[in-house]
Image (cartoon, rainbow, N blue to C red; front, side, top):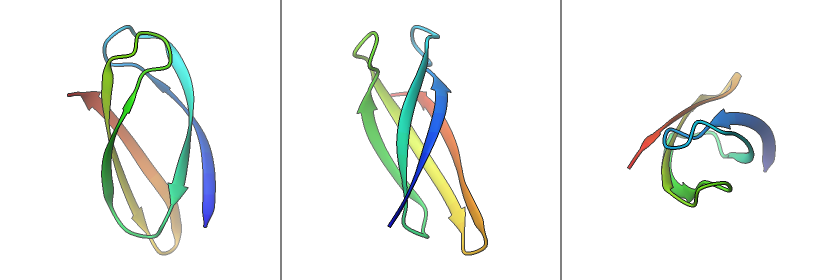
Length: 60
């Protein structure tokens, strides 16, 4: 299991937050609350075998 620390911007309040992304080698989607405004952020993690995952966030 690999963890990748990323800075993202909340789609609601616009504040930067640091999140840990677990690299599992396959696409995943999950919801995590913003650490600042507590609104639900949808994370889409796309990865391939030879690259670190790309992280996209959006409002629920």
